[in-house]
Amino acid sequence: MFTHKLKASSLHLLLSFVVISLAIGSIVYFWFPNSLVSVSNFKEIALLIISIDLILGPLLTFVVFKPKKKGLKFDLSAIATFQASALAYGLFTLYQAHPVYIAFNVDRFTLVRAVDAKPEEAVIDEFKVSKLSSPKMVVAKIPEDNDERNALLFDVMGGAPDIELRPKLYHPFEENISMILAKSLDPEIIFKNAESQKKLKTFIKKHGKSKTDYAYLPLEGGAKDVVWVLDKKTAKPIDIININPWTTLASNKAKTLLKNDNSTSHKE
Image 1 (tube, rainbow, N blue to C red):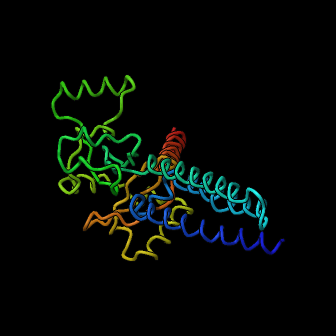
Image 2 (image 1 turned 30 degrees about the vertical axis):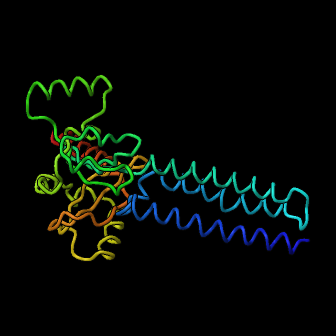
Image 3 (image 1 turned 135 degrees about the horizontal axis):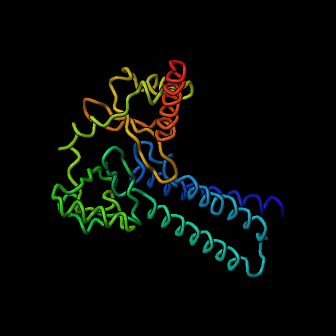
């Protein structure tokens, strides 16, 4: 009996593994490129899918399986339906969480998730993308007209979406590369402490060149904020460096202010 149970659950595990691997592998390839997996909510959702479909499903099969058992087909069908429902829910949640746009806004990149994206509101045709497509890099710009700028400011202060969530304000990434690269964080500041220096060295060892060959910009991913590294010559995204840019900048600023205060006190 145990052997039959083990064979049935093992076969179930193998089939589940193949289906889940194909599904999650395709999602990562099309929806979460350039290391975006680690900054989104992908891991939590994928873990939920794996725990239900890859562990609980085969385990239930092991429990209910008995050769020639009356109602075995119903039991297995119920388990398969439960798994399919869990997988469908997980994939839909990943669909909602995946970035449709990667929007540059003033001094940072932000992942605009499918649940928040409104491509139908885009003015430029190339930004009227499908929510099923891979992420599109765009630049969100504040209107140059004073009245429009003031109206936007009041809207945002009142709780309306900021400019990275407004496709009407999207502009081509390729036409704004110089402006984006000019916002690069100073590596001497952002990688000042020992931990961040270690992560920078790991990045350089992996990708080559020197630290001055790259631009370092904040990336707001939803799950966490990191430093996104772009090639200065091509503006192509290379990889992320897993440090919080805001915490690092705030810490360095605080240390500088403290140093200045101490220096002033000594002079007095």
